[in-house]
Length: 383
Image (tube, rainbow, N blue to C red):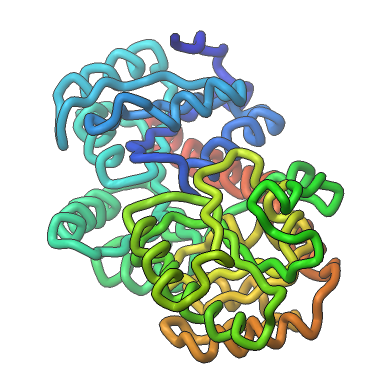
């Protein structure tokens, strides 16, 4: 099923967001929040979801349908498929006033080839170029090369700026646009999931997180830190929402550390606001990040947080009584978790920080400014 295209926006352009997705993670939820928030500002946009050739389920497209976000699927049967380019070109013929917003290396490459000689502007968002494999290193080099030719590059963390500048992206085209979340959905009023659903006692001290179970997110380090905390806190439990390649390793590590019965894997969930409300402390143990939505979401629900000093996290927590800890330092993470037990309770200052600086409305307004600047520059160039 494809959503019908809407009319051209009053801004004079229609934004086509392009994303090649392997699942529902931070970048996907950022786009799913951005599209409707832009519509509230009078900026019409459509999500173009590039099929994942390795999966029957196209989770981003399916989630967009469930949320009522205007979306279309783009066919793709490999790393590069001319059918994808052809599908984009067909849409560009329908939208001569399109503005392309790309969100990863594959969408950047396909958009660039599909645009051809057209003078349509391209905006990119770098959600984080973390080259953990040789293939990813090549893909990110391709993406960086293309970004040098784009009209604007948004970054979600200031730590990304030097890398992009070093790769040749002009400094005046790079702008920090921090991620935003729906502060109405993620609020202290969220009804918590019953702890008994996971076999956790109602009076337990519950640490938790929402993450992909990958090396980047460091779930094994979190389990090790929790084991240290659990030795002194017999009522403590750890629950992790999410899934990934390290699932079995997490279970094995917890068992080897003698805490298998106190570590609970909740799997992927679409009720994270209720999940965060169940926690006493949210923990972000990542080795590296851009600006993680999970941290902002937990803060908006008013949960105390323990987080590593990665990406934009130090800026998010600056001036708040929740100082981040060094990444890859299990003892430091454990000490911060122990300290959090002594300061349990609502954290309204965290929610206030998100409401003031990290709402989806603020993010959409900043991107709308970017689009208008880029489009005005395009119209001057054409004239």
